[in-house]
Image (tube, rainbow, N blue to C red; front, side, top):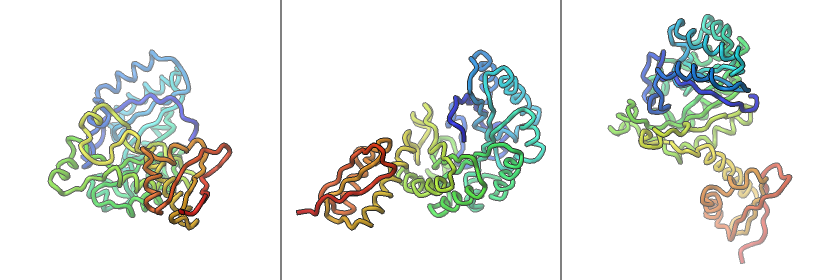
Amino acid sequence: MSARKTIYPVFVPHLGCPYACVFCNQREITGREASEAMEELNELFRRGSGDAELAFYGGSFTAIPPREQECYLEKAARLMESGVITSIRLSTRPDAVDGETISRLKEYGVQTVELGAQSMCDRVLLTSGRGHCAQDVRDASVLIKRAGLKLVLQMMTGLPGDDEAGAEYTARELCRLGPDAVRIYPTVVVRGTQLEKLWRDGLYREHTVEEAVTTCAKILPIFEAEGIPVIRLGLNPTKELSEGAALAGAYHPALGELVRSRMLRNQAEKLLIDSGCEGKTVRIMTPPQIFSQMIGQKKCNLSWLTERFSLHDISVRSVQGLQDIEIKILQTEP
């Protein structure tokens, strides 16, 4: 993907979506009403020009009746012609993409399509009320890429019936589709959803922050190994979610930071196992840009490694020019 640019988000919650996924309440997640979308588009005409992207989020855009799609896309195309934006992206369902849809999007200058895949396990998709199967994700991805559009795939962890192995399977299957980027959204129990009822009835156990961090720390390297950027980890914090709409589950404003810190802990653990460091004094040397992540929030990584290996002492040093973390054994415990 290209360098990050300014994004003008226009939320169209539930527009076009014929299903009620167990986890979904777009009003609470986005804090927006569908009626605000056109007003937001009109407001953009009063803004200055720049290297900005208009993004239709929150619904199933291509499932909206074609004439309604065109009303939004016509305004978006005018914004592009006037120089207010330079590109258009939208999110949609895998089963709402066909040849006619792709032609319409290209006609109005759409450059990126995000597909809510969520899982590549049909059993998980069925249990979650998605209304599509894994093959729909594959078929839509092929159509999007053949048309020369950028493809972004979204997946979730912790859905009903899913587990860590299922998440790893989904990650590997998404890699096979060759997306330009991926978003990972660990499941949050949002107020007003079917998932809330299942959770309160004891039929769904929440996907905790710790579980999400553990799982994502294992699947993020799968995408990195394929050179696929993960451009979002966790729901974007909103006033509604932070003030009570997120009832349970993996909602944390710094989830991505926690995951990357855990990945470094996992890496250090492997190096320490290979070093035979039980009971010794250890120094971890790290590039400056990941120094704080290596330490972890409230020094949690250092505490965990100390207990895991019964270390006499552990410290972290920032070293300019270092490309990766290195382990140095300083002494044996007296």
